[in-house]
Length: 310
Image (tube, rainbow, N blue to C red; front, side):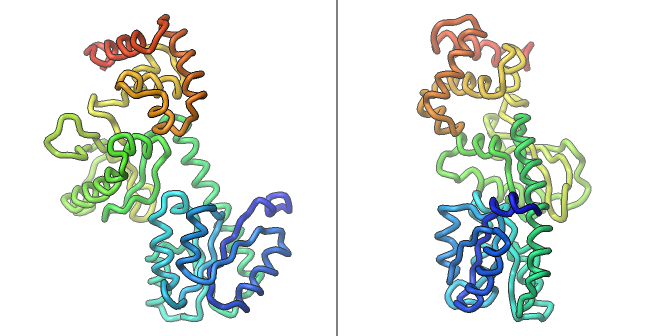
């Protein structure tokens, strides 16, 4: 790791011992790493709610929320779910090591901490996390509505595209919980074996308007990749993009215009400013040869409802 790269790294150290915090803070800062400290699990959750660290060093045994429970709660927060957690513990029995890994940790170190070993493990896990995150960003840039889910239904990660689609379906966040339950039930019905790539099921069985989940395969240990598609049987923004030669963003804006959303609503759904939505909309008007949103919505609806385009 170069000095330039190190200055960009943020490490959150969670430990109730002032001595350990001071020791690790000094060592990390000497290596050019920005250090955030938390003396309790509750404090760590509060920090993670405001700042996303690159890696977390977690003491296993703390009063109140212990490290295991803190890690589990951090993994439920979308913004930090991908952040690797390395446990620091004086507990060396196998059951404690297993507990750390089952809680969401990627590694563990026994106390007293060997600094050279700690730095080496941080470098490895930072590199792995960045590779995985880059892949997810690339998938989102390609317009992929993908998510990785465990066989029990726990959502490991999802591309921002998939998250926006779920939030648009149910803004309160309940759609993700329903995905977890539905995937868990579906996987249990298959016994975890015998699933063929391309098999699909509805998020809401019996509803023709329900989102569909397509199983694409296993990409890691107990990590199954699914693609979300809209009720039409394929992503409607893909249809609009191909038909009108739009960019990914332009097709998304047009789709929500066709669904009657205001510019402000579209900005919130897609994570864009109203000004950016307006700029995309200007390009949409030009490419569709229309002058207003009503005409654009009519054209988009006609294409989406045409059997020749589906």
